[in-house]
Image (cartoon, rainbow, N blue to C red; front, side):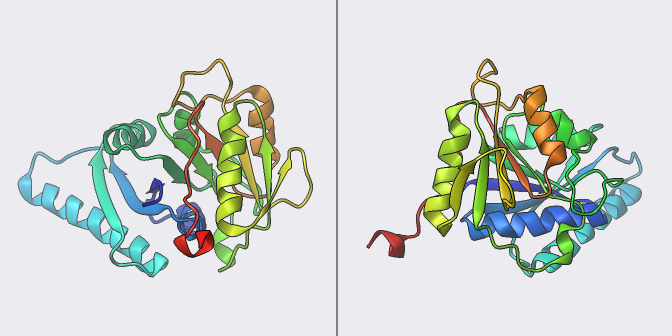
Length: 229
């Protein structure tokens, strides 16, 4: 089984970008789950049921977009989307949380939104961020992976993906890469994400999806059995 991967989804266009990136990660072997964070509950039972049903319908639309009605879905309640997703990731031992870029981001560029930034500051799982308008293309072949080193886990994660799909791995900065894997700061807490200012600049200058890896915790993408024969 591949790494459990939570996609933050609220049916906005930038979260369709997150779905598109989730599909790419699934092609590496990731196990997907869609998560929607409700910010309040209703005291009135009928209104609470209505809000819950609407949230579940929203996640079903996401599943249809993925063409996977069997994908796991979770509605959670938290005053903060970032805090809610961080708690869910910790509770479920999820290894990756996926976001779209901020809604104001120019097409083809990456800009972490508020919730993604919360997980980039000591979050308990890797953070993946899709470029704006990533949804507009159905297929996203990953031929070259750039690695911004710092902690060894980023390079090892890139090598895991390379072993799975046969992509080239190069050091950042590099040109024309299809995925940027970013290390956490070596002095950060093990198993948590913490980025340097250099990493923050690399993320915001990227035109390809970004995967930020927790310190000391490579993301394991097992090589398919057929490839080991």
